[in-house]
Image 1 (cartoon, rainbow, N blue to C red):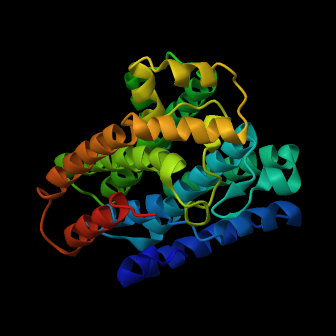
Image 2: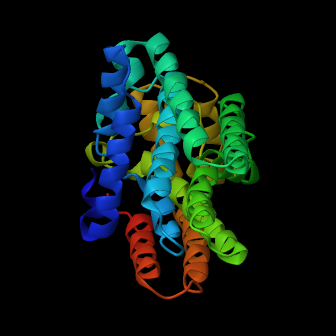
Length: 321
């Protein structure tokens, strides 16, 4: 598990239980599939989504027998989307290790992602109401639509800031929001508290994705755990680039018109984005979403869960690489 949770022993212990449930539920006769998923589980991800579900649940009546399996589902849903994303993006690294599609091929990766989805709904059928399954299914549909929108807008220099925000709302913020909401609902929180926690998840998710997209231009590859400039190579234009395109930068447009970039092209694109304020403007928007999250967190009932959530949000959204 990522050392991120060492400061929070209660949450870390919860997450160890969640990992145990995940390992148990990915067992199968085909050991290549099982071992590939176990490698992803053991790769040291931050487990943010199950952690947020647990933190939200601790505002209500915490029942670990029901909540740990749901937290496992949230992370396994996320893992399934990562496996499929890596196929589409032809990514070779994920969390600093070789991706499933790079190691075992795209065919196996498709089936492994599908297997994870199936296991998720098996767990849900044993631990959730039909209403909860319906909510989860709708969220997964929106995540898929966000991925489709991203794919259909590849190499499109006309992509707007609003379209980008809708995309990351579907791709990232939806699952963050669902994590908070599921934990709150299942622990019997009031309707208002469930809504507030859901909004916190949305704002954290939006800020988190913008920061992650900034790191594609500014991060340290070893620390980020994936190749820098990878989005640009794939024709995925994120916020820092979109801001500069809005100002009709002719040099940037002419490089992007190639639709295939050598190393020098990537270096030039990154330099232009930095020189023309794309990074600073993106950081400013991430800070706005972060502030919204903190404003709602500060209205939550006082207690250990609120204290942890304030600190985790600060640690997560002020990232230095």
